[in-house]
Image 1 (tube, rainbow, N blue to C red):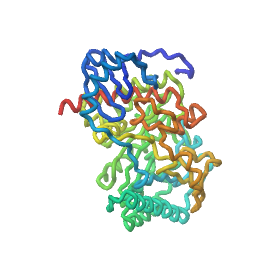
Image 2 (cartoon, rainbow, N blue to C red):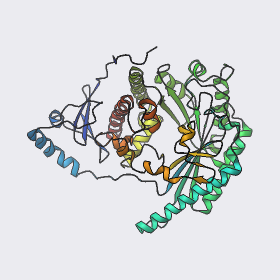
Image 3 (cartoon, rainbow, N blue to C red):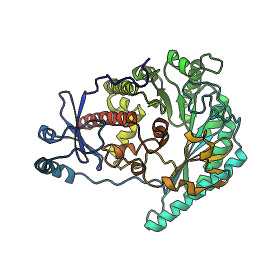
Image 4 (tube, rainbow, N blue to C red):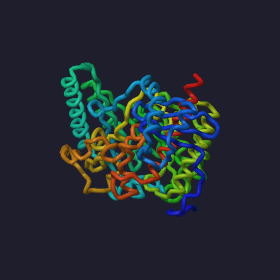
Length: 466
């Protein structure tokens, strides 16, 4: 096992990087160099001449390299036409027409995952069997009314988009949310009907371990047509060691049976996604991908444990992600690569360019409700009762004011070339590793920049072949 604090020993120099202000370039082995413009969100191949003039950088450097006047002049002349031919894109701002809510339907779970972020047993330190539907419905109305008001203000201020439609997203969490599917049905139906009355589209997601799925549960959920995210870390020999039942027995058999039941009714539901978590005890993304890609699912998501700060483990995860991407691209080029959610998200941003200023909408367009109907900024903060910003129908909106600035500013990311793809990163991740939600840990930035360079390479290769 790799221990925390071990010296970085892996060879991560397979990709060279150079940078001039908002213009960053990469080169792999004998391939032609390619570039990314961090404001225009554009990828393009560049000449060897331009590559040779650019100052050498690295994946840990946030500040642009200093250039002599002559070098700066030469580079500017070569870049000028490239920049003028591209379109300057603006920040994406969905705060006026989108709201995301997470709901802890229950804070009990039938599994005991070794890395559980919900207190180790799905309870967040507060085992609550069922959320109160009666208390939740008025909360839904408050948040939807607030969204409708923001849309109205935006239309009146901008004097345009009179048909602007809102988007209200609810993610049902646990514990294990399918321990109380009736609440999902009732809350979801209420939100959908209220949305219809207010010209607001509603979408639903359920994050589950899959072990409780049966036809009776699916009958309750199907009218909502939710996206279903399965939490599964790989084949049984991996998943059972990391995500056992509370009695220590296998959970994978039941989860796969639940998946089969769901797949038999796939047309009644939205996207089906597999989500796996990696840390120093499990870093083989390739093995998990090999298992997932044989399943009839839409996408798969591979994330690094938000509490894992081991730098060698982080590097191994990055290398395994790179190998997985290589295998996926070889198997089915862009289509197969984009079954990996990380690549799909960033391909979409490159296809429809915008500057991301916020990793997520925490405190802006995202709030969370626990099983006692307490309100928080983030679903990962439910264990911290001093961070509660409301209860029931009462919300202290003033407590959200410190988060209204873009996260790339609050997190001091203004000089990072990846800032408008990353959006400043996860606040809870930062705080878990550094003690300050606005101070990044090197593992996060290192991982993000390396994997984004892979996105740019595959994007360029995909678009060149069209």
